[in-house]
Length: 313
Image 1 (spheres, rainbow, N blue to C red):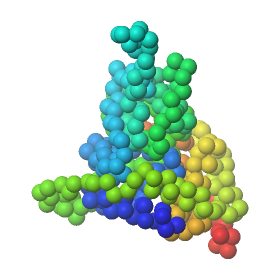
Image 2 (cartoon, helix red, strand yellow):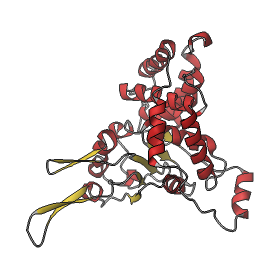
Image 3 (cartoon, one colour):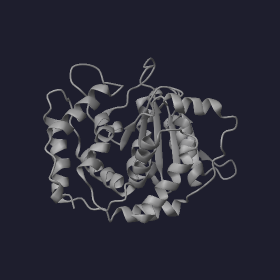
Image 4 (tube, one colour):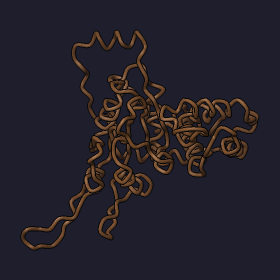
């Protein structure tokens, strides 16, 4: 796992110069990046969501686009539109903002469902279809979306199908006192320069395929998924896509920790962030903060039997 550890350590060090004291969250973002998944940052304004996305893009020497989602944003603003050439009259496709490598979808829940759905094909198939023509997106293609769980007026909550496209739902939260004092003491922000390349990422992804998950570990993941579907407070349990995502991101966490096999601790470390946003609770409106769903996942982690250590590898 040398390539993965080297890749993530270098990126973590670069990002941590801007985002202080959030190494655990950064590692989870990097795990999603290794898996080719996408991340939803569900947090209040001013906690560093945009800074995290920008710093990641600059550290990777990747093309970065930021889109401010608003109610008047159209799908064509995202994927592009065909316009006539003034000389020939022939229609030519003008690519939209999704044609990038790292995309920040800022306040994604402020756009209408029609615009939100324009991202579904991009996030899942890594392509855009317009006027019957399919345009592949450049690899790596990584979406970081943000939403504010406090100000819900004038927003359009993401439907379950859209939430299921996000590998992880994370929150940066406030820094502790020492970190805030360090931020206040800064006079000049450190400049972020490219430290890794897209090719290194693709090599790390290739190495990730070598990480194994034993049959008991796979059964443990399946048991967590089944338990979520049978829980009396859960309206919609973990999907098959979500179950596969949980195993894949657990493999990434194992590789980041330097192991070539998955342990139950890898699954537990990432389960809440991978499962909760896919599990709407019963008896009311969607839990935008995700607190109830996250509590349920923690409960499942306490009740579902863990495989014995002798069966991990």
